[in-house]
Length: 138
Ligand SMILES: [Zn+2]
Image (cartoon, rainbow, N blue to C red):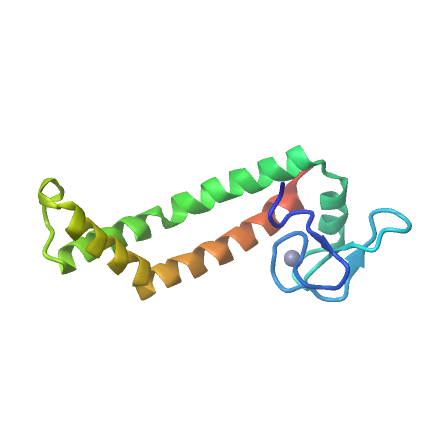
């Protein structure tokens, strides 16, 4: 099951190529279907048509490969966030961190504005990378 690529809705909600807000440009897959693959302003009609021609396995692979690439790009930010959170709780030695301290560190990571920034960065990178890989896919 794909999360973004190939997503079809009755009304313009999300672009079926990159997940950004879609516009009123759409592509009907088959006559009589009420759900349409919509496109944003940044994605090309040729990309929408390519996505419509891909089977679920192809869509899943593109999304999975894209997630893998994007996670690599934000992994250093995530490590920095965890280490900073450890440092701020006075935990400089992982072998001496007990369960209670680990919960404090985990809560600090979860509540961090930096985590929100990393998530936003990841979504933008993911969206842009999906748009790029679909456009170049042959
Ligand atoms: Zn798009």
